[in-house]
Length: 331
Image (cartoon, rainbow, N blue to C red; front, side, top):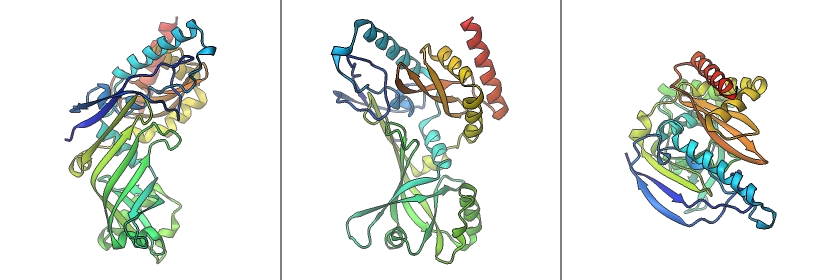
């Protein structure tokens, strides 16, 4: 597998507060480190860790006090220490899992009309059993005409479009028309992701399959830790989709609606960070991710399970065990 390049940057310590915000940036001096990723819990092998430590934007020292800065620094250290050790999926598994459960991305093609220029469009997609993106395109669409003239393209998918520091995936490949022998399977896969897409049966529509040539990712943009890497088509094809991620929506919805205080207690116990709230975002076999707040600052945290979850029922067991441990510790 190709090396993963991590740009590790010196954390910027603002005068007023240190905790990270979404959509913030600051100029850091940088040092480039190349890491041969062995998929350990080292932060360089993690996608989520690289997007956690963000610089607060307010640098006005006139509003700061020594105690505030000390508290902020302590919280920053707690976050960093926790995130460095938190168990996560191997990057290639996370990428394939996120793609498999995504439904929309930015397609880039070579413009037929404006030769030499790229052309972009938002498209809905699904993935087949191998992780290849499937498109349902109309012959009237500009991107369809582009692809039929030059099938080379890329598909960009953001895990959280509202958070530019989170994981962004780009699949580079060749868009190939689906054969009649495979059409029904592809149609079923597409409708499973887009059940209301009745137009796929219109006469001007056809299915295209983007055969991945290589897959790139980046995370932690404009943060203290910037990570990026790429995988070959063989590595991507052989990677597994995490079996627990599919239950993220029902489990997190239930926890956020009925057990938000319990989630906060688990996060406080697991990280030692005195968060004001914790909103569960998604989960996989090794843990879950939360959006948390502390003194008006918002950041994401990774909360690992005590062991790998085997199935959906096991996730409930693990959460109950973690809650019991948190309550016992809290007294």
